[in-house]
Length: 478
RNA sequence: UCCCUAGUAGCUCAGUUGGUUAGAGCGGCGGACUGUUAAUCCGUAGGUCGUAGGUUCAAGUCCUACCUGGGGAGCCA
Image (cartoon, rainbow, N blue to C red):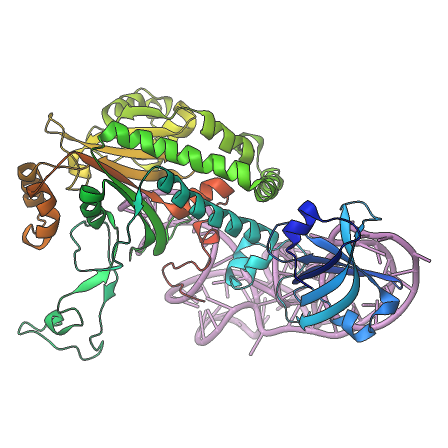
């Protein structure tokens, strides 16, 4: 008999059909005559109830059907006599595929804290919450590829190992095969990377952007979607040492085209989740509502699904950094001295400033543009005012910066002079600069932190709970 | 990395100004129950109080260091 997925049975199952399922026991309740087994196979958040006539099965077998055990169940689909489900599986044959010792199995049919489940990350997929999170994560990854494919973008695989550390996007992880205790040394007693595997010092990538630009300047529109590594000692609910990033890069796009794409892209993904993941979203939404009940009234936030619909239907507010500084200087918290950090043109905005703009002033996603060039990367297009660059940051409520991007500097001389000012060795970047030497053109791109986006979509609070096996300082378990 | 905070049973927590045999709920185990919905009811076992030092007649409780988690900040996606 062919195994059916529970998702399919709950959707299309006809009473009277002989059916085989395989999955894991969520709960078992029993009485003298009948046992009820809630089965989940990961295909959906919903369980299928298996009904087993106690007298027809071996007592020892029933005893071993504990939470966490893997079973194959063959039987007849029937209309449920109880409330709570339409159909259930009347078991005729139950095979214990793998038991789960109830004294040792850590996942109980009760509410666990997210912290505890994080320590059991290998088993947390078996909970409703993490099942929902990881099905959503998959759907969003799929939707991202679908979106770009429909728009004629090409998926470009940029390297994971890179010799350039020019971008300066944070500390990098060194990749080496040199002996850690006795590396070959140069004359001035430093590790001799010329004798390393690649003949030079190499690291894990912090961004695929620079290589992405090379692809865009021939293929037109590309995107990368791969792992990214930052060796920053960041200990927050929004940072990972290993995370996934989507970086589209488009020839002939100016900053406005870039913003239009970013906004349309985010809204498409939200719409895809609403249309295709409603069971999981519904579960996460009600889970969040339970949590919100413990908070004081004024700190409660919008229902997850309402929030997604709101962002999907709103026009993101676009304004320049300079305008944002004006708004902040005229704000109540500024006048009452409630900001912890100063507000002045030229300084980088702090989270408290971004949060004020997004959550208090506009109450809507915001795209900030045209930042002072001194606080932004070398490759950003310089404005004619000689002070600002064509950068854009998309700011979301609670998450903060979810997208960072810019129009790129396509003028070779301007790019070179900026690199010189910032002490970036142009010789090592010859390949990057060649795009400006040969057939240069206006182009733009941005980076979307995948996990930060999944935080937004799922309403989860900690980035370590939206990636299967989080890598953070002092944590590389599993 | 900085500031704050926490670590007590498998899990979630209580444990008074330091004072005798460390408590509960859930989970586990045993039993009851003709269809349950994280079932219900009765019974029962289960603890080097994060680790290492120190103060004290006496430390789960006070002090120091370290480890780990959480909240906030910085860096950023």
